[in-house]
Length: 369
Image (cartoon, rainbow, N blue to C red; front, top):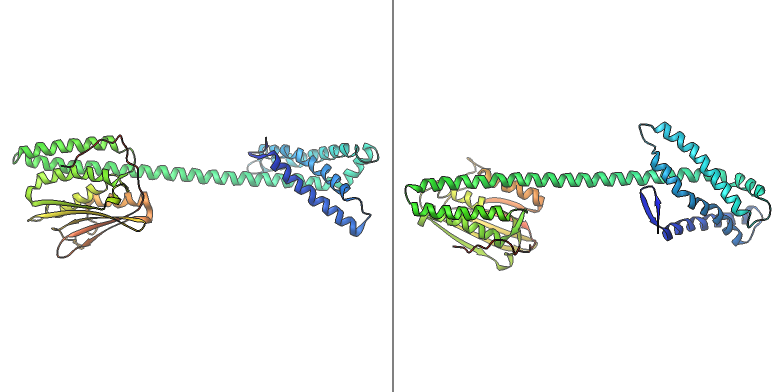
């Protein structure tokens, strides 16, 4: 059974336990007071008197809480609420005195009128104080509940905002990749129609994977590498023997969670700033490993330079959006940076919080070419 105190519920036994503690405290106070300043009575008498007084207030407390919830002391209308509670405190205190006197007259010598005189003389002031203490308690509970609700609402809105921003970033990345790939296919139409046809088939499969897989923000590294292989197949058709790829993946990282479509814009950036602008061949290397509580991924290419004067940010919409996505998903726990490698080339180093993700059995299968 629950006792309703305004917007708060409390178990009956816990509620009675709290008031019993009040009963014991005031019984001891009366006993100690009379031991020094007046005639002493039996300890059970002090306990009985305290029980009559405070269990009466235990019965009336839910009413006080309801009045406090119905007439909150806050602007606007604070003056009217205060006046209401002044009158209510008098009425509830009078009710407590009458009930206490009626119960006490069943156990004490003397008439109901005698007990009323005793209760009015002894308990009116403390009764008024009890009413306003309960009122203050209800207002404190209400303010705490409102603060918790505001914090919950703010957290929910922040989460929704972050999810919306992440979705915007993803929708920017996919058209960015699509336009670049279509441009590469158009370039090959007059030179190598067979390769252009193969690229279109791979692009179709990759777009189908996008539509089927990307309800969430994270997928396993295994699935991310499958999607990356489709993209690399398109680029290998485009650059022929000029482009080679190598993947070094630690087996214990394949089930780790990574942001969906993480590697494709980074690899695209490496190709575009490598053999996309420079003569000669290039080698794209992807490596993953565990490092303590982090997942480390590196994307290296051997035919580009990190031109700090020309394009420090670099690196186009792909890398800038990837940085934003990592910040939204992981905050300071994720890192992305570009470094030069010897004797020539650039490496993109990514550090993510290490967390394994269960593979979805319904995801479409892809066999790397």
